[in-house]
Image 1 (spheres, one colour):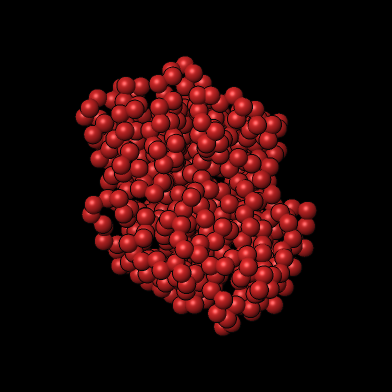
Image 2 (image 1 turned 45 degrees about the horizontal axis):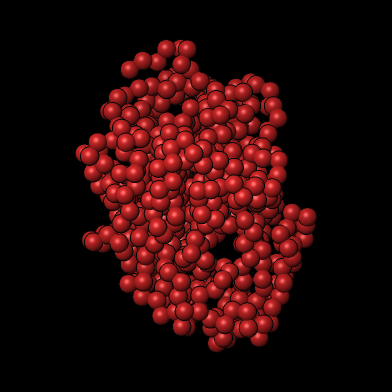
Length: 549
């Protein structure tokens, strides 16, 4: 274990989720030296289990959190400009039914206020709709008690995992180091100051120390685990469990997102189309279980299916229709005595542990939409504590690597004209996932034509994407490549049937022998168990240590 003084960096960031990576990107762009450490892959925790929506903050109006609404609208607007290949306009219907706890007129009033707040940053004004108009436009919706509704424009990021990958790529381009599968085993605390962290490389077992002038605990719902036993701060994380169910298109399924109130508990939930399938979700449950083993319970599946069947009477969904589930824990601030989890703030706080523990910041809260603003706040705090000039934050206008072109529509059109030997569907898929980095996939194919081989018929993904994942995008395992780089693993059978094909397709390029291929496929299947995929033979038994509140 060595830690020469020359290895001291400005920022040691714990956590390579979207908040930690965004912090690294912002800090590196302002001239700070940064290292990011994570026990797993980038974006493999909370980020990969989100609802994939970039909220303008509509639901925060209900709690009069105008600051968070304004911030969310601004950040949504910036993402449309800096990541146009990943973030897209997403209309959603908010129907109003007799018996809803939120009357239709109140919702329309809230949306009118939202439109005023959004002003020029909106994606189109909300539009009230009569029950008759809704029945014509969405014939699958239940008409029982339907009183009307509002069509609202928000945004979606179908591949939230790619936001993390591109933040990582940009942070590295700016000089940050990102180390995955490196577990933080403790903080280096001496004389009321935190000097960095102790780590273990989970692939080699090697232990090390990373010393930093500041340490940023951005571990999401794991922040208390990082502090446990070394920093007396009280409980900081009060994250709630959110689960989603993925199903194939069903009778009466809508072609837009439907945002509605659950009859069972009045929680607002979604049914929305995604990648050729549908997402039902999410729950919002108090969770005190193992953060590394968060699995959707049978009760949650039943709840989401029942509410969907109520809203779409012809759906007739059963547990047998569930392709897989996605569950995670939101990194929310601990709030004692809360009776309704929806009332817990979705904002973020940068907590300075000084003077008791100088040199340590903990990021509490945060959400997908506002990751950039959170990172700006963390970096501002870091610059102040380091005694450095604040400097100009460039991330408001800096494009993501996949949008690094002066004219995205023109690039897209040109790529589609020159993407042979790929089919138009394959070319469009590359653009939707990689943006301008689709050129790198095509370059690999033109250098080695065999990499144009289709490795997954459902998605049309090609072998070159897997090579790119390992050679240029930080993938370490097959699971990293399938679930968080190429997204092949988010198909209907989670690539259970094609994992071996994928591994064999790149084995020679990566130096994998037959044993390594078997191990990677086995490891991938093991990683899937928390998703409860129908394609695996033996279903897992979900933990029962979550409860409604």
